[in-house]
Length: 243
Image (cartoon, rainbow, N blue to C red; front, side, top):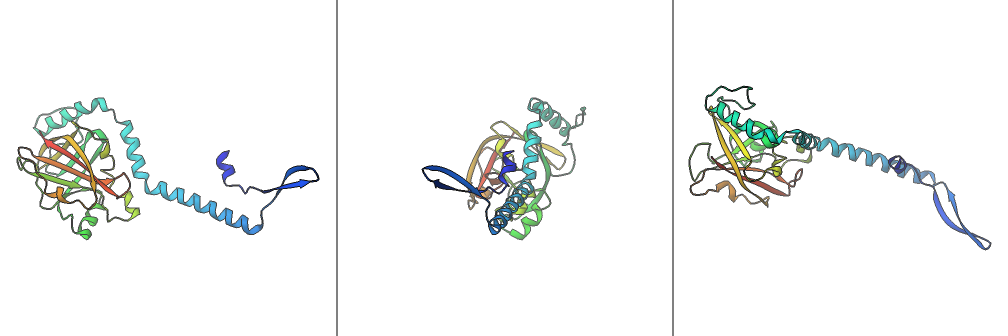
């Protein structure tokens, strides 16, 4: 009822004095004021629909995340890792042994292909890749199994994308839900590589030093997305170590 009244023209009121008594007299607004009011109401409705349209993938992803049974995540991870080692298990996990290059994050229900060797500095190149709803592996960074001191950098979404591109590539939108010890799985050349999250950082959008990040004695995976969710103001980085 309140929402309905929001889009109704409210009669104007003015204080009047009739002899010794005070009161309020209502009168309808003029025609041009009504036109302005209804035009503004239409703009509000269109804006709300547009916002819902843009962020629909984020909302769907959030609902999907809420429906995931987190108690079964460890079991699913064990199944996937065993499948990657060549053992036969039932039921068949989502991410199976193959020659594909894919990422799976069970906690948030994210899974997609990885496009390798994408330049993070070539706007035309990475926008073309990200529109395919895949994750990009930054050119010059490592691959799974390259060894200690190496880092693979994966990114999705971009500060250079237009507002409508928020509908594209929503794979990493829920990275903020990841905490320490959460698992990330990479399927690379028929082998499953397991990484565990150990920290996360929010950095400025222009900070690109992490493309050359490394730690002695660790093989690192860094995931990047724009932050806060649905904006491009900053970057959220998830750090995970291969186990």
